[in-house]
View 1 (cartoon, rainbow, N blue to C red):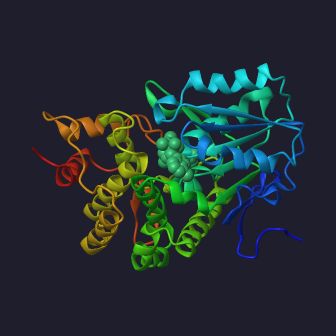
View 2 (cartoon, rainbow, N blue to C red):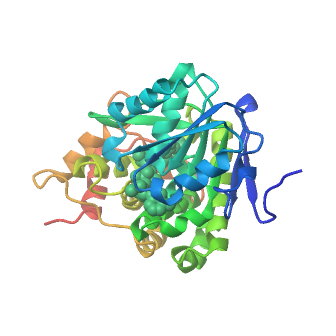
Length: 372
Ligand code: NAD
Ligand code: GLY
């Protein structure tokens, strides 16, 4: 019988022997019961950052004392710019300096940066050790901690070096979202909104009706948003773990968004902000391709703006802005032989991946970007 609180909810990721559950609720991080049934090991390493550590590391460390004889802690510097080889190496250094072995369990305590990097460290340390995601941003709870994409950045591209490697559990403690800066909450909402147009128009309507509760961080609203997002992602990942096809729909807004992030310099726009603006561009592209009507684009634009996200793209090059976006989008992982692949909305609640003529993409960029 489960020892979780009555109001704790679970979503199952079905991937045969790599199956696991996402546990969603209040106060989970510091409860030893949250970690029951996980692989037993002498040692555990919590990987976190210098912002999250003072807030939550001691509670996690205390809870894990019941499951591991030794709980090590590594706090990396905060920021996307540290999602790199040097800091991945720092994880391996800590593990080896403390004599950790192939049973050692890694715990990723933080947002998507820590989750992606810890997951990659777990995938490669001694050819693979178990890891647990303890996501502390909304974005990480609804997206990055689920589904096993792990990576670090390369100077020539974001998330270019990584592995598919599933966690053994995801613990989404909604209470930790209380300390999240407002713009990080909005960035997470971008990924929640994303699930509406690609898979569930009822969710889109629910977000519209409950946006003020979400922005006010009402626990019931956050719980529903996290659970429904994880359910949708679980369905997609359970069908296409390694992105042979369907999983690419989770990148709605990301092709334009990655161009914004790269063009502005990583960190200038939050990932979720770039995705929010990118979804407006991708929706307009879908409209110009004759797939959705103009009202749909306007509905999505309004919601994204009301969630506190930018809806106008930055100018990346004053001389040839659309050309710069196109050049950056050709570096996207979905591009094939130089042809950019876009996730488009193929009717409300349904997504598809396809190319589009450069001239049309240029029109969309011109329509969506601030012109000086
Ligand atoms: P992040 O990890 O940088 O966290 C955002 C900020 O919030 C950081 O400053 C962090 O220290 C701080 N923070 C985290 N939790 C906090 C809390 N509870 N209270 C106060 N501050 C807190 O950013 P993110 O938006 O969580 O993740 C973005 C990263 O996720 C990117 O690197 C992106 O590539 C990756 N990502 C991965 C996937 C995937 O499927 N693996 C999906 C989407 C995004
Ligand atoms: N965030 C996109 C994916 O997990 O595939």
